[in-house]
Image (cartoon, rainbow, N blue to C red):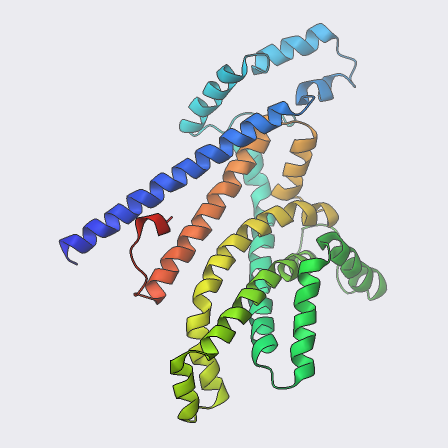
Length: 319
């Protein structure tokens, strides 16, 4: 590797790292301010129903630092964060890192399974809605795409539970104990995130089939499967970025899905923490989501460059 090439890689890495740090700082700062603007707090919500006096509540708030000024709380939070300390849950009275570690398994399994469903469904629908010979099949695929992007996710979840759990009694509707509990929530979440992948893939395939190299391939008499192979090699590049973006929607979708299917994961934990104003927990989960999004986006950009060497090494285009 030449010295100039090595220098370019170092510049790109430094630029991506700096950009990631700025994104993370912005995310945690916005969440820090947002959760404190909302009325109420976890201490009052927990102690008031138990009959605690105002003095006892104020004493507990002072102990947790909730009565400090906003700048003081922010500096304390950032200092803990730089030392790898995510804080102490106001509701669960345990270290945030311990609670997240206990809940991350079901959410990770759901996200990975939904990603697989999204990838498979998006690819199949994208190809059939563009290249399927029978016109009814193309129209059917486009109708499925429209449903995935227009129908609310909770409606699809309720219908899926009614059909496969109540009527057919094939799959469990609540819980996260066995692999069978993963099928329905992963299918619903993957279906709803596949719509954007399908539309981008369909548009990219349509554009690829109009390129001169594809016209030449048709003129040479290549069979349809080979034409599709050549078209997909070009069309998949824009799809990679959409996959990274949909990773963020997967993480957001777990909040709704885990609530509907009563799964004990990070999504339901975030929902409970927001309702109970558990500041440290909400901040930690927002930071984790931002990190996941940045990693997915960076991997997508890197894969694009590995697949297509013609992409320029532009610092502004690298994350």
